[in-house]
Each structure stands twice: as structure tokens, then as C-alpha cells.
Image (cartoon, rainbow, N blue to C red; front, side, top):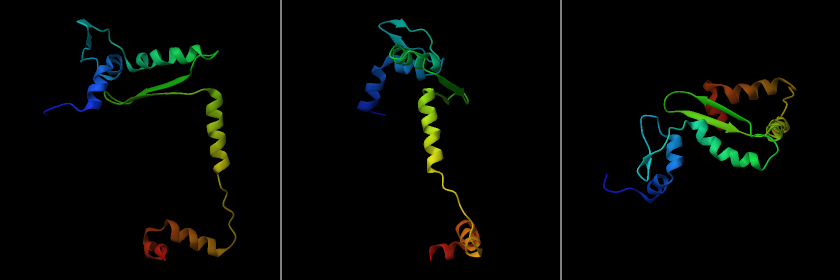
Amino acid sequence: MTHLEDDIVALMRRVIDMLGILRKEIKVELDGHVLPDYCFPDYVDLYLQFASRERSQNVPRVYQKLNWSWEGLGTNTFEKGRQYFKDIAIDQRHFIWVDEEDDKAIEIAFSNKQVEERKE
């Protein structure tokens, strides 16, 4: 490596962001002081504190750590979650079987043996 790209340099400048996403074995230093360890949920809480101030309720969250390198946290309000699933229900289409032609169409659509017929 001969140089760092601009986007990497910009990310490195965001010390707190780096602190929240790096593993605990890596220490982050700012102005000669080693910063305290943060876990990913703590890091997200820094941002959600400001969001909670704008609302009368705390921001709900779901956190899951899959292994040492993959973890995620999702947030949403109850109202937005309800609307999301309501929209899914609206997009749902019901199939009404009419005759044997429907059976043939389903067979052609999902059968690996009938790839050539699907192309027609």
C-alpha cells in the first residue's frame, strides 16, 4: 500500500465512529489519551440519545451479535414497524386456481426440467 484513499482518511478522522466499530483488542487514542472501550450498542446509543430527545419515548432497538466480526442493531418506532408490515400485506397477491392450465403454468415456472419451455 502506498497511500490511503480520501474516504479512508475521512473515516479515520471520525474517532468515535472507529471506536464503536473496532474490536476491543484495538485501542483508540485521541490527543494522547486512550479512549474508553465502547461496544457497538454503546456506540449506537450515542446517536439515539439525540433522537430520543426529539420524541417523548425512547427509541426501541434490537441488537444481535452473530460472531466476533458481525453484529447489528436495528431501530424503529412501533408506528413505523406497523406501517411496514401493513404495506407488505397490501402487496400480497392471492392465487385463484381455475383449471388444469394453471397447473401446467406453475409446473413450467418452477420446474428445473422445463427451462426451455419457460424461455418460449
